[in-house]
Image (cartoon, rainbow, N blue to C red; front, side, top):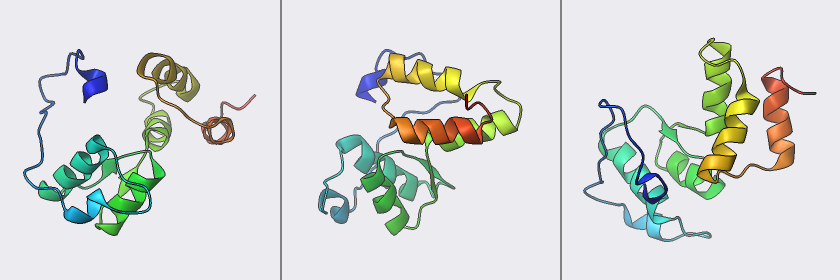
Length: 119
């Protein structure tokens, strides 16, 4: 949440910390960042239906704990298919510029193709 410290959240958003982080989230071939460990631990504590996570190591760790995962691209594709947004590319550009989100060019092209926005 450090990146979004100054964000103004809707009143339905509750910012919480986990009470326990499983030990195995501190080890592994690529150690997870603090936020990734906390997100997985909190999802486990609250019995979340799914976890929004994009980094591959965090996705693997979440799946190993039985969590369903999706990423920002998946959320945006679902939002467009549901008519909630008109352009995946515009939103991707914005989060890449404003939030420092990174996405490989080949993956971005595939997401835009799936959204029907490929050139």
